[in-house]
Amino acid sequence: MRRISLGVMLLIDIILVKPDPIMNQASIRAELIVRSLRKKYSVLALGWDRGEGVPNKTNSLHVFNLSAPYGCTLRYLALLPIFWTWIFIKLCIHRPKIIHACNLDTVIPCYAYKMLFRKKLVFDIHDRYAMVFIQRSRGFLFKKLYSIVNSIEENFAYNTDLLILVYDKIFNTFKKKPRNYIAIMVCPEDQMIKPSEILTNSFKLLFTGHIRRGRGLDKLLEIMGDIRDTELLIMGRVEDKNLLKKTYETSNSKYLGFLDHKQVIDLELSSHATIALYDLNLETQHEYGMANKILEAMMCGLPVITNIAHELINETGCGILVEYNTIQIKEAIIVLRDNPELRTRLGNNGRRAFLEKYNWMTMEGKLFKSYETLLSGID
Image 1 (cartoon, helix red, strand yellow):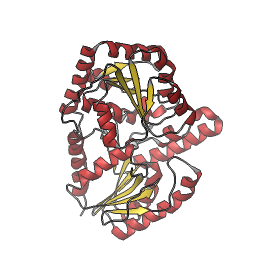
Image 2: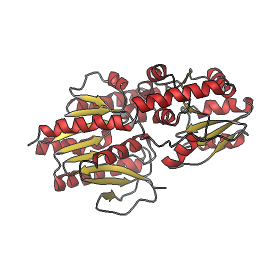
Image 3: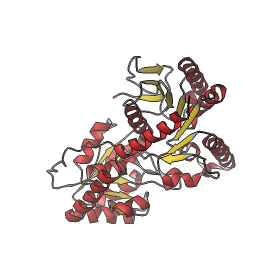
Image 4: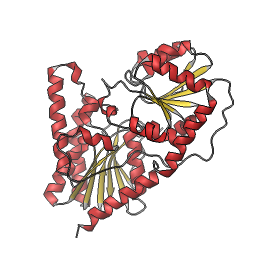
């Protein structure tokens, strides 16, 4: 499995910066953006080695080879200024007319380049940095740090030429509204040739994502032993070994490992329902955000059980909304297990909404229009 974080995507006239791992939601989005932009522009990707199996340098990929593990680790923080310097040098060499910077941890050298050479900057926020990495509940210092980081991020967002977010609702997290912004969701490309025929007597419930508390898996493992004729399939990066141990101790749960994106889609096509749950006291961004697993479930015609994206679920009728507690989660699982017609209806609703509106072709059109507008104002 390739674990390279997409650091900077350099187009002949445009640069896009992204430093998170391939299986991360944001990097799936970054790869979609790159593939789309390559239809109109020549693309050079600058990536950061954030794991193992990094491909060699090619004409379309340059790698920052000082390896740092995934996550906000001390080594990552120590290497970040060196990475910024590397980015800035690459920018100065290639002199793009537009810089596309993804997330706060890459925007600083891009903003410096913008100001120095009077170029255009696109700031693409995949994750609100403080909401993802800083837990205010840990005390006064963390609350202060949270406020400072949010203010820095909002200042860059306000002073960019175009701000891109993954969901309209995230704009509500800004105190000062950016001047020019759009939402481009992490909608997948259509990969479903036909629905898989599920040959099993057991109800297959799929969990994908990080193996850590606050993502619903801890709640699921509390109740799975009491739900008959149901199998919980689990895929994701392990960040909590105690929680992983609990999956092995639960007879009707099965951890399948950290799979690539195609394998995840295959799992979705062979499951009955999927889960997208978040403790909003810990995962604060998801109160305003959108999990790409919901959009992928829609593409696969798979019903979803979730406590986020209320507007989307109500609009499309593609799943069941619950509170983040074991009682409602258990009830929703049993309802879907015992009602195949409901599963089919919810899945078909999601698939129809995907084909009509929530697909990458639609998002790609918005992306192209935004770039054409920026480029039209450049000599």
